[in-house]
Amino acid sequence: MDSAGWLSDEVAWGLCVRGIALSALITFVSLHTQIVALVGSDGITPARAFLAHARKHVPGPTRFVHWPTLLWVACSDQALQGVCVLGAISALAVVVGGAWSAAAAVCSWACLVSLVSVASEFLLFPWDCVLLESSFLLLFAPAPLSLLSGSVAAATKPSLAAALAFRFLLFRVMFGMGMLKFHGKSLFDFFSAQNRLYLRWFMVQQPVPTVLAFYAYHYVPDVVYKAALLAMFAVEIVAPPLLFLPCPFSALAALPMIALQGGIMSLGNYGVFNVLTAVLALPQLTCTPDAALLWARGDAAWSVWGVLGACVLAVHGVLAVLQMPFSSYTTRFWMFSDPRPPWQHPSLQPLIDMCGWVAPLHLAHSYGVFGVDAPPPDRRQHKTVLVIEGTATPADPSSWLEYEWRYFASNVRTRPPFFAPHHPRVDQQVFYEGRDLRACHSNLLNPFRWDLSWMHALALALKRNAPAARGLFASAPFADGPPTHLRLRSYRYRFASPDEHAADGVWYVRESNGIAVPFLGRPECVELLEAEELPSLFVWWRRNVFERHSYEPDPPELVAARIEKIELYPGMFD
Image (cartoon, one colour):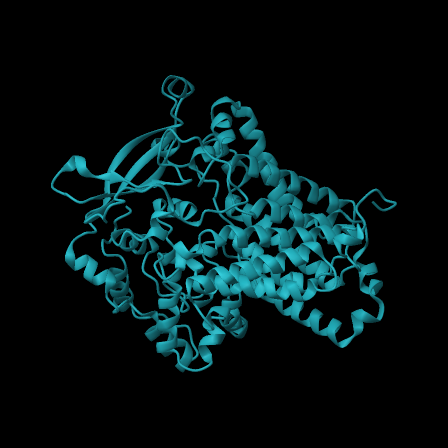
């Protein structure tokens, strides 16, 4: 601690850098257990097939720019796991600190980008975006001293440009989350009678609640939820601008942000998001004025590398500002959309085009999920859960067997789990399928992806009885042979009442909404899904980006035809 009672710059930045690297380490270890099932040779969306299409349609070095990945060298299952291992070792080297930490930070970031380039359907959750961006900024942060020396501090103070870049990232994450929650609402709107209990309904409606959320839903008084919504408004809307004020205002703004992440982590599973956001707030607990950082590094700040780093961070800041009006749902494709939002003046077009060209590097992102909008009364106490069922004898209604999700709610007797900061990708993704927010929706305007819905691809993997895909489930039937038919069934899940839980040991009660997707076993459907003639966005990309250098969309009839081919059953999640 320094004389003012706050963290010193060196200690705060040492902890921040190590915390970001630790988040990357956890992510790589978590991915190592899933990457083969997700994008392996027999996985849901094989990376090898994806890169083969890229090599076929985009010959020459251009493809390396638009899909920057180490996996161009080799894309076997061992190579995928090898990138995870290399990233984990690099992140661990940054945690340990010392002379090699700067080079290790570069390697860790390159491994993250490499994996996202071939698996963006599963690797661009909001916390992945924060990790990608903070890992890039880590290249400009002060290197940490070796833990072997007995110190957790950084070797030097940060440059002013780096300090502002990290602060702006924390501001965008927190304010972005608040902006989507409270955007367009007056105080009277979001504290109206129908919205004041939003946080209570969110206990069950969030992707994967913990067991504490179950008890909070039933036993926390309504007045606490109303007060918590007011506190969340203060932390996510009022506090972020205070980060740019001198100490102690910046520190007093950062402390409740750290506390909020602890509360969120206790009630829901959001990967490394809470840990990562908390460590981003640590540098704000110092009391060093920004002007002092301008001269803190002496001649190093004005060296060629120092000036070049400041210029790069300035460009990153411009990209980040352009991302701010959007949310996590649109961060991948807004720069390719048309028409432009009204605020995007034609003079900004070169900057918007720059956002498109550097999009594959994931340098800056938009943030914001889960708005405060009271659902209809009949939907406030439950969420939609999709369950895969299969059969070898479709004529027998009793022969359909259920694939039980490993972490996501499907078995009503499974206790809501704690697993963060581990992130089971499929279990989290299926939540958004149920909300009709599939990855393919946000990829339709993205020229760097052209995938089928991952749920269709998962069905194909289960039709093959692929061991990697079966391993994603807590319980997978048909061990002796694949099913001939698959279907998705939609359920409404709610938390069991205390009496129901005490009597039957169930944590959820569910009722069927009917079959969301009919048979996926008809020959013509399997033929279409397994054919090489996928709806190729490469044609669109080459015409609009590579040849004409514009981002004009296809005519509506072509877009409709492409959607119809991607979604074999239009409206299947209505």
